[in-house]
Length: 334
Image (cartoon, rainbow, N blue to C red; front, side, top):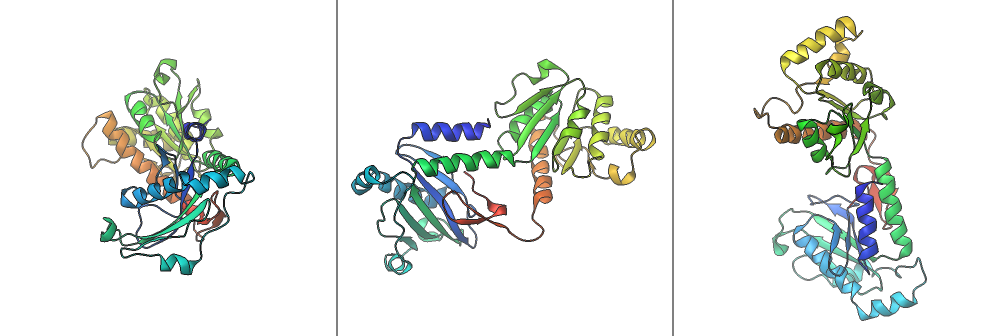
């Protein structure tokens, strides 16, 4: 199970009563996109809707709902799966808006909305506007949240890191924090020790075979201890026209040597070779420390994945766990 899903389940299991805050709509410049989620308990939060005063206001409102005497009574009487009876009308919301752009609905037994202008009056100058939907989490909604997190995990792009040396370890640690499924592939068992918990590891005598089995849209980063092995893996990856990224660590000399071998001995083409990124992370920053290379390469890989998965026919709408509508490019996420 993915570490994020595990963390979500652990939070829900130990938090007691919980409220879900969802970014239900945005206008202009905002810190998070439509569909961003945050869970709020009496003493902790899980996820973020962007931080700052916006988030403080949402947490405060959510905790007012959690500790409302009326809510406590209604929660005991409410049938399983029923979270609330709806929000106040738009007219009542507008009438309750004080100077500064903070709009809140009237108390609604388990469901409320905030309409917040991100201006200097609340200490944020983004200039946009955010609509938040806040709901109490019951067993039915909790199950939807877990199912949505599991579905999100199943659809994450795969990043294959071939080599668990110093740069491989650093890159695995960097990528483990990002919304991708990381697989570190090695021929040496000892090189896989100490990998982050969220990272999948694979010990195999034929790492190039992992390239053939990878799903479409994967990223392949090659940095093993053996240049000949690097060449075999990269050649296999460049044959994958559906790869989002193919990168190889090394110098320009190494890249030139690979090109000569690839074209003459591996039946490669110039078009295929042109897709190779080497050195990884670019050569603008002249710093060869593993952590620096990893940071630069991680940004490069995420950019390549974003370009690969960017919708070409406009946003697609899907139903959110909180009941709102969102675009596929901004799916529900903590």
